[in-house]
Length: 324
Image 1 (cartoon, one colour):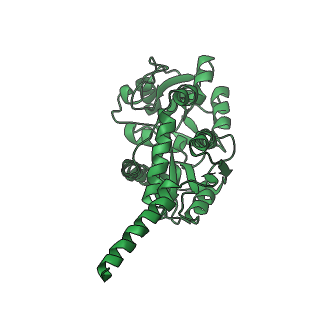
Image 2 (image 1 turned 30 degrees about the vertical axis):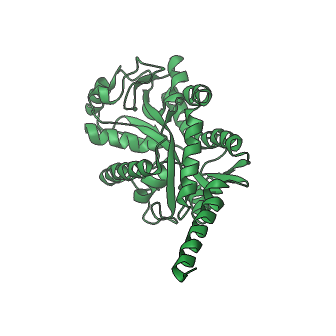
Image 3 (image 1 turned 90 degrees about the vertical axis):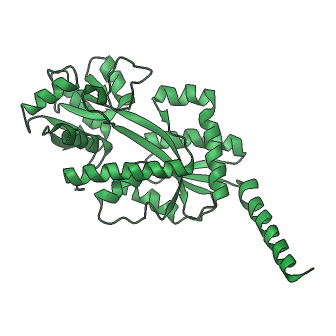
């Protein structure tokens, strides 16, 4: 056999061996989903539901490891420094990739260079709610009311740079109203104070707003999704209130460390897609939680992240949002 034939044979063997080592046999041991939030939060709930179903598909244990804190830095750095073999992946909210880069002058991770986007998971619309004492019934009335009282109305957030904060900043930019932010350590205490009348309004996940709204404890003026919710078609969107293109949503995605082989990324993407296409999963998990599927190809997810990052860059810069 000639020298070039040996080289070709060796290359073919290596190619086959690589495919076997990666795509065909993956996974052959425990897979860890690192979550940048505490147990019980939305990110954790999503990761556990996904992990349970992937474990059945793969016939391997999929465990959730919670690493909350430090604006998602801890969990992100942990995965960025993990072996790029598909056995450690990150489940996190959008702030890790599209808000933190503009909010902080220095990050302990590179959101572009340190990760491979696998797929979006779910998005959650946020609802704009007010205390019942606020004399408005819709978005138009709210903006008119607020414009006559610049700096007099306040709103709750679940922290500086949270979606509850930035979505309201985005609304102020779009409308020209001047509101006062009151920052809380979480959405629940802020919601409690809206109900009590200590603050006038806030953006909060629609699923969290529905029960107090139905009980008459708050007014729900609009949802931030691009279209009306199938479960509550009578609730208008913020965009329909006179602000075309306005969206107030939170989203969650799945990421791997950089240099994770493309065949493993493709395998995980395909299997996550299988989970989300299952009718039972959609009926018993997505629908009750008011989650919208964000399953896409890795390339589409990457493009979406770039676009969303620019959106929040503009909001953060115009509003001059800085962490405490």
